[in-house]
Length: 216
Image 1 (spheres, rainbow, N blue to C red):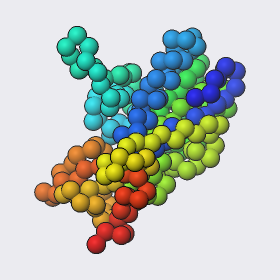
Image 2 (tube, rainbow, N blue to C red):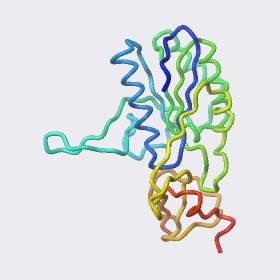
Image 3 (tube, helix red, strand yellow):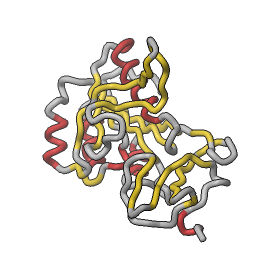
Image 4 (cartoon, one colour):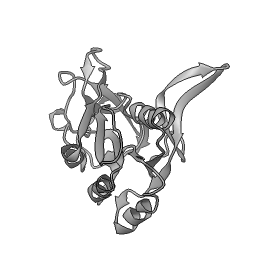
């Protein structure tokens, strides 16, 4: 991430497929801004995302500290999936308390998420938005294209393809271990069971990715 010196608005999008450590990049930058830049941050996550912790943003990567598994994480407030004027007003109440506003799983937000980001930008804040740039269909995920368009900087992360170990840019949804057809299912998490079917996700490169409309 390019150096932000403060005093002006700056928007950074961190995007890529699942398992690309987008969240880890967001956490690292928040801690870096606080520890070495002397700036205060506040982080937000969608209320519907309770995979690792209800009140923290948690990286997937872990290490062993004193014999215990440790995941890098930061405290976070939750926001509703639909961003309205009331939600924007609530976030702006902290406008003078923090320099950096970070949002994880940005693709899950609907409504006026773009308005919120722009308002923080106009208030000369550093805004960090991390999330999937593409859905399991291989298409732009909700408002992510608009958010990337207004960003001063876009960091595109990649993962390792689970099939060939190449550069993964897509997220594959699997149904019972096979590429899933198109279904209107809004799932949060790597492993979900619905109607006795097991849905999982994995990163894949463009060659190994099978879009839902190509599933036979």
